[in-house]
Length: 196
Image (cartoon, rainbow, N blue to C red; front, side, top):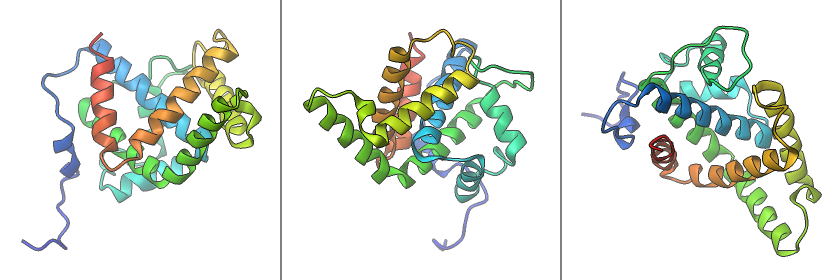
């Protein structure tokens, strides 16, 4: 078998994303929410667009799951915390795995930017300065907070401090997800968070 031939199945890395048992509906809701938040952090940090997400799906041979902007919108709307005018669908495990692979593919492309942002965050903490005083972090925090408030049901109820904390936690998570085994880290983090 030649290594040049591409296999038609879009699941080669799914082997790294084990699942002992099918998640309960509440667990899937939590997974949907976390995946959407990680994507939101990528958007806020690097200006990731729908086109970039669709290109990542094509790069990973996952077009059968994320075929176009409408399919992507419906997957993102499956987050139960989103403001919605309908179009919500149930997310299945294959779609969740696909989103994990897409997110980590995009995170790897933004690894240097993410690393720079986390290094800045550490520097600001060492200097006892607020993160938003660094331009890169300030822009990221503003974009994250604005987008979160615009899209999420509880957006107007969260304090700026809570949104900042969430944004910074997701930024640090992105650094891990941009690593060579990032897709596995993200998948295991999703499963661990939903067991509670």
